[in-house]
Length: 81
Image (cartoon, rainbow, N blue to C red; front, side, top):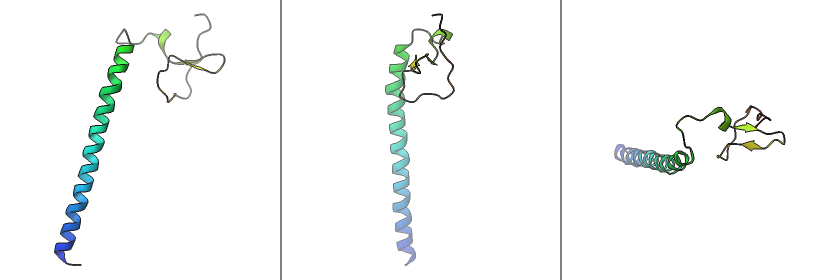
């Protein structure tokens, strides 16, 4: 393989890496803007109160957790609500 062939391959590889980085940044920015607006609109106050924090009820269902992923070791809900 000649030097010019290696240079062409390096340029192609660098272009692919750059394209993947740009695509990742743009998709992350899109997701952050799209879901941050939805999340900000669903909360009335800037800081969540203890009553609105995520918890697990007596039947094992999640309460006050709008996302698909759920945190492990979340506290049990207070029964006196």
